[in-house]
Length: 226
Image (cartoon, rainbow, N blue to C red; front, side, top):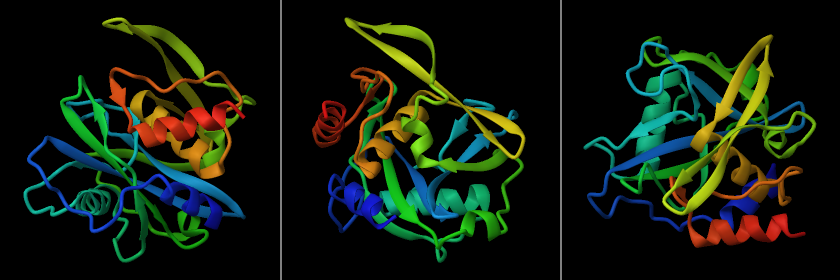
C-alpha cells in the first residue's frame, strides 16, 4: 500500500488544495484499503431512480457545493452524504490533476485517500437509498488484468478521434457490476500509476471526452511501453 500511495503522490498536485476559479467542478473520492494484504478500491452503483446516469458504477463524489473550499471538501462531503463514510476515518494522501470531461465543460478531480486495513469489511456503511443502490470493492489490480478482460462495447468517434469504451465485468458477493466510461478509465490509469505497470491488454487514454493532464498521460504512456 505504501508504494501505491507514493506512486500516486508523484503525479499529484501540491497542497494547499483550494478552488481557485469559478469553473464548473466536481470531485470524486478514490478510497483505497488493504483487504487481506491486497489493495482494494471502493465503488458505488448509482440508484436506478436518479435522473442522471441511473444504475451506473462510479466513485463516491459529486458536484462542487458553495460551502466547499476545495476539491477535498467536495469529495469528503459527497462521500459522507452518499455512503456514510465519515471524513475522520479517511486519510487524504494526494489529489490528482483535474480531468476535463463532457466536451471539456466540467473539471473532475480525483482525490486519493486510504482507510485502515480491512475497513471495507468491518465498517458500517450507510448508503443513501435515494442515491446509492450498492457499494462494493475489488482489487485495484483487476483493472490491469486480462484474466477477465474488459469488454470493448464499441468504438466512438468524436471529431477526428476514435477511442474504445472499456467495460469491466466484476463480481462482488454474488453480484455482477459493469464498470465503464470515465470511471473505468480512472480505474485503469490509477491502477497503472499506483501499481507501476501497464495493463495486460491494449489500452490508450482518450483524448476527447475525457482529457487528462500531460503528467498522467506521460506516466501511463511510459508504463505501457515497458
